[in-house]
Length: 531
Picture 1 (tube, rainbow, N blue to C red):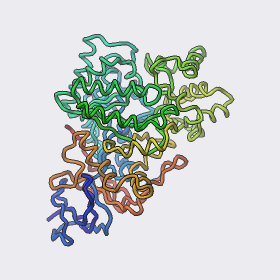
Picture 2: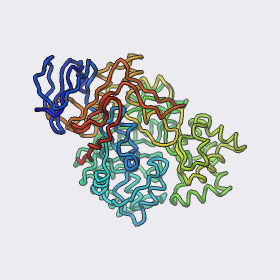
Picture 3: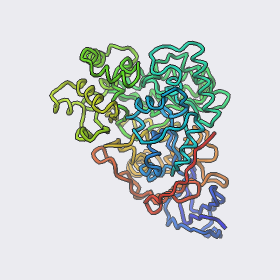
Picture 4: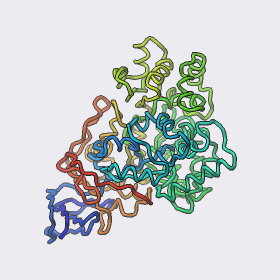
């Protein structure tokens, strides 16, 4: 007898093949049958009548920032209720492990507070395996995998120093990457617009990424530029993949800033050219014209060079503020992704602050905050970061809808959230996958239903090496979503981002119901995925 039978469903199996009517049976944490007959003849303890709704593999978020949030909310309800059953952590070069530096955990948590959130958790782990154990002891609703972060291994060895490593230090950093891979990390990530990753030259990045080669796992990158220097940044990334013979997964694929708008075709062709060159390259995208990250990312790299406490001291200094303002306004640092100037202060919106004293600025642009305070935008940024001890995140409106559509239509691009929690977040935290299914599939006909589901399931599973996920087949993991293709939609907006979607009825993780009738069950069936 099966534990679960979902019958009378439109089965979209994740491969991109046309849907068919049938049933899916589950025993334990595995799919046992996918049958096309109207009456499957399978007895089950629990039977769900899909009533013509879609059943698909669970969605895989290849770009999650839930690394610490999962300790505060183990259900990760904003993700789970979108249909996400697997999250890939350790993005943009920032993983919570390995962490072996003396006193490093507290400093690292402070450095990343705006990205990972400041969660009250006893940081007991050092290795990736110990982090996995902490996650499993805490419990978590979706499955979670981890990428070893470039910034993390660099911080372990060099702290936040703005210098090249010695050969011995580079070898030590590489050994930490290997340690993480041996502990089951799915790959290696970097974020080359963020400190300390941005201090690395191409040789350093390539030598660390080369540690992936014996394992066949992906190098996941937020490249050095998605705006002014995007073409040089993509060339650097592809060359590393070619030189080291490793798979590439490009984070949040975009062309940012007015000068690059309309050039998405050129960017997607670059990916095709890389593949013709023999580089196994794919990408991910969020379905919005705005991004989101730490407000401190608008600061020049030199501001971060001595760690978060020194950064705060720098931001209190009037002469340093004047230097920051000139670096931003005059584009004085070649190769630096100057995202404040790229977007413009009217388009940089405060998403989250740590203190109640500044809650009134959430949802306001930096330009508006500066006007209200009677100061320059750069002064307003510096003041906020000091007041909040760097714990400020932002939303940046700097993409063009036509480019979003061009990239989404590319067969090599999967869907991801890149969502930061807290305050007035980007709506992608609550609405990414329903937005694709409701807006771009049903309303815009940009994608077929089957292709959209492939981009959420088997394509990301392939990219992350998740061989038992992403397709409805006997023997595969029982991660499932039941949704209504006629009603599914995101209700999250930039004005009201913390709204759950419509039309996602059931979510099953490892054979257990995590969402039933559109509500979380409170069960925590997720596992740490060790490769």
